[in-house]
Image 1 (cartoon, one colour):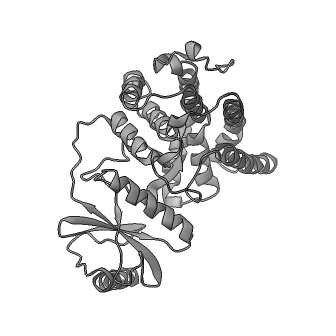
Image 2 (cartoon, rainbow, N blue to C red; image 1 turned 90 degrees about the horizontal axis):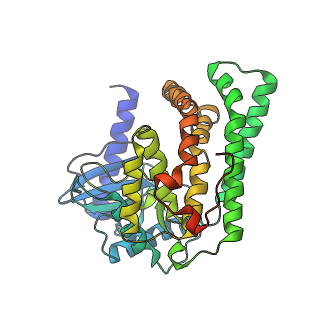
Length: 346
């Protein structure tokens, strides 16, 4: 038997033993080793989340966010399962993990995602526990500047040493444009935070790192607390809009209008929200993330896919710039009435 198969089987057996001993749960189907594992037992779906290296404060915050949303009536949120020793953390094969549980609840295929997202945000805003480790509130500026500085250093090195392949040539040629776009986003964000005061509806809520149509898709809707950050709700709105544009570059307008109308039927957006949303759309995270993965964390099996993605981002940069220039008209947002500043060069 191949060594990797023996290793996987050993992990599988140890997980089974830990689940039976600590939770009295028998694995019925679906346990496959990987980043996390999902398996079935009885009428529930269980997810194993490995937590080695995670701060206790972060884990507590994720448990508190989960418990709050469940208490608020969100049936799709994963519940932390207490082990027999009255803690949430167990161990198998020397790795610490937390067990999450979801009921089998199929998500209807025809659903108003904007409205559902607004309800999710509304429920989470009433969370009373202070969130610090998982919070991104007020940190965009710092994160964006660090991201730009890191890539600018790499870019300078590549310019001096000369590009070694087609990807590096593309990076060297295109980075100055996306650097300028990122700096514009930071300035727009800073101006927003200086000029506008957030209202009660701008309070922090539970968000996703990158929310899209796929986030709550699949045979079963699972809202996993380990996918969450605590942030302004426009984070999820802007990331959905960004992905929707790239998925539908020629027909994105109706989808964006409908999504925003659905969201605002539950929670109207303030001027501050619209400005934050626009600042996030301005920041070309889609370019930076692709370059970062290629340059800083290269995985050979993904190289071809990422190179093609980067080329597509570059090819669509003109269309995206035009989209940014017309965004408020496209979204049917009365920018002049709300006195939302425009970017002059767009």
